[in-house]
Image (cartoon, rainbow, N blue to C red; front, top):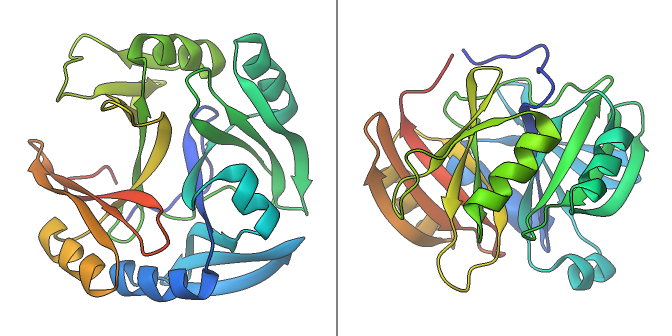
Length: 256
């Protein structure tokens, strides 16, 4: 099973959903992924989404002010770092934006909200009592973080300088993502954004069957955006939840 007790710096370790309707989102994602929910107070209500007791991601309802400032509901991706404040400062030096400077999340850890030069939001996570997800890659868990960007080469240069990633651009083509490696392990994928689509990070979750999962998405009021596409070691599809947040699903071979 894909249980974790720590994450190497530069590795994605957590995602959470900022949504306009927390109760409705819980119904939807419980139906799609089988999650159950543990509400905790962290300044505002924050829900830990669990699978068989393991923390797999988070969910919270945005305020009216946040809805205006942050745009539509979306999944946020977090990269583990040794020092959130230092990475925030480095982001600014590299042409990115510090949306929210480093701050403590109770005793769980320290985070900062950032934006890359192409406009994609992401966060960093300096862990304390919460390492990130207890479990990844298994069915119902995060398995990949995908960057959709308006400039693949510029994005690659930014993230390589910020996190020390190695991004393989040799296979770059309209339909083939570039792969992101952190200390030799696959960490993410980078896609060229279709025309008029803004840059963004997208969470991808493992399912048993992309076809059946998409059926369930639509039964629960979500929308299918991309039919399953075979990618050699499995199939991937894309959907939107009833509140508007994008996510991907994958069925196939994953790392332990």
